[in-house]
Image: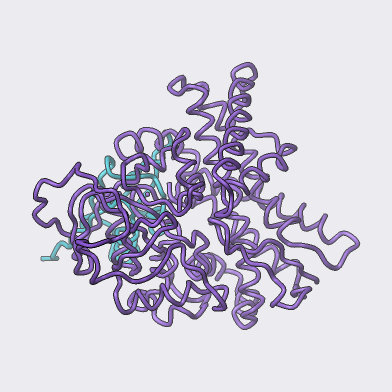
Length: 68
Length: 443
């Protein structure tokens, strides 16, 4: 899995941090999303997908990468 | 719904990932042409989808925790319909979860209430936005610029660090409430003062003034308020906050109003508008959620017992209560700036839309058995805080306050019960934020 964020779109609601704190954080100065792990391990995939689904600003996209 | 303008849980448009149902039709150059939404008369293209509903739709004798039965019927049968507003004009009522997310997440639907044709739920609502509109009634990029001045203060880390302080406040309020007594009004002694104290601390507003601002925010929230009373209440609250901003210029502190002053980017009027939004939104919403959640749990003793026996359920339970109760119960207004097809109908540029969050949160396609309160359910996809870039700014704080308030109440008062018959409880049907006026309890 590859995770992408768009800091321009982010509105700082923080729901991604509640869903997957290992993968998302917020910038000190303005609460905008920060990506901690662009390729999270399998056990976090569900939480990351949930974070993308509930993001109000559609600032998170998830790309499924096939394992070779 | 704009009597509720200052306290919309929103403060919510990016594009949704899989909107599916939203797509632009040929816009045929109507953008900017803003037909006044007079009732659909002869020649209207909307006759086929007129629902006969007048919004806001009352609950009647229905279950006080449920959305109005007529709105629920519309959601199942005809999810995007025309409804009538108080002034005889019409707007679209959008009732399904998927469609509500699509509208609120789509920048083609504007939150700018100064645009002609914007739907208002009351005359008072229209009055509010003409005076110093805050960023919840602006669109990006101006909305984002203003909102980003506040997002750091409500970010998860910051709010989580406030847990000990919120816990201390909750405990002190319960100490006082239970001292030598066995009954009290939970709204007056716990549900309202808890978030009021917290938002005062955050903003740097003296809590001693709570009667002043609570009375005025009550007027701003009432669907029954006359426009003139709304204007007066708003002016008084505004003048109070302008004075506060000036005082912080003299004696700065570390709270939000003072830091907005120190930024030097906003004038006193703009700071006062922002302060008013945070002050009203910061206490009314959490206060009503706390009291209504307590009542809902008292009426669902099985769920209450489950939560008492398994305290870690509290986080999920709060999401489920937000979903089930959806206290911003009259819907969020938007105005289409382009033609958009939604749920099989075409919403034209210049037409108003009202997204009913409470019906979306009962949508069985997303929440099976949506009318059942189930504290073990995964309810995270609820839209109780709105959706899109205006989604509630204070949601991390609301969550922490609700988790602490409810957990503390259940733990410290194991015999908590209603002190009046359920039928005597007065519900806030006439307010922008739903809840109960008082909640007499005993323990």
